[in-house]
Image (cartoon, rainbow, N blue to C red; front, side, top):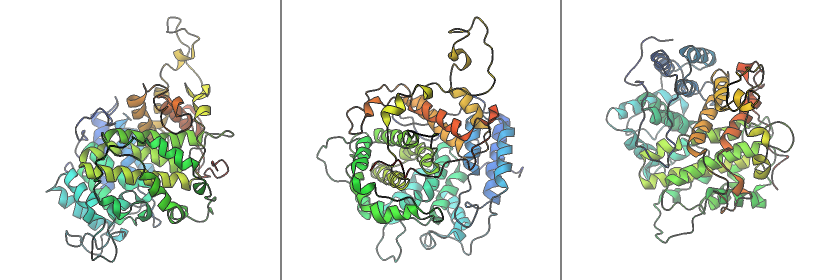
Length: 481
């Protein structure tokens, strides 16, 4: 690994943007040190120079920057960062020069071609010398001309690309925004540019015309849109995809794209839009955690729905950079993509009552040998709370050393939501249309974290990791029809 750290592209991470009480803007945990920070910068620099954004020719994503930043901000030791990077570097695809350079005149000419990743990377790095994050996001992702323009045989559709590849471009760019890292930000935009853009059906050109309806509307919560999706019989007919085929998301676009747009258009985006960011964060955790808690069998830790949670953490930071019309585009487009993945996984039933009435998930604890508390501990030596006074600590300890590179991102998002939303009482969502939404409370995030680590394996405590790391069977036998 390189010892020549590029401190211009990868300075010591710092917090970007202004504080907003309605936005989840994460903070680093105790444990960050000079040694771990130097290790992080070295990893980010080495990854930037040596590896392509896709680790194979099928477009699977290089997650090494995500993992390093997540482990670092959760307080992992420098040796953990280095060990994780060494493991995940073994299968990366070497970087290579592009056929030609990209300029401000040609940037739309090679979209969707990963042979031009390096050229796009150099282009956005050059742009960052003159422009700020917010200006670049507006110009190259959210501007109408960056999405639909006259006289072009193929439309640029950059917002479509920003959400492509199971939301990896927004995740990568979001890390750059959150930690004020120009190199990571440029990588995210270059990654955006070389994605194909599979979601044209749910990000129509009409969404790039600013909303002009000034009449006040009844507020429709994202939970209510979800209830309508669940109640629509036409959306419960998606069949289990052939495991040898990787096109089930394209089938969702073809068969249900127009219907998804119809429902997203019913979601009100008036007033304080930051609260709509919160709605999406609650919704995505509900889809993953409640959807994955099937009546029979172990927790179904769905690989695809997990990405709805990990990506949602970056909505706040990107949202804070944008002007209001672009904020609306971000929220609508993101919601449409998430609903598409939910339907594509079989539209799992959301048994909220069973989930929140389950005492086994309320206070998760690690398996294996336990300490013997002193007689003076509170509340008493025999209390489970004396062994595990805060379940988040053992969960995060085992997460930090887990070999899977997605789990730390998931648990970080859930822990941030628990910090921000943990005081939310039951009854908060009772006026939405979603069945039993009045039972939803701030324990959602701890329950989800406990279920996830129990499914993927308490590796620090000696359990083996789940074979294949995540569940991919979907929910085609439990879907609400």
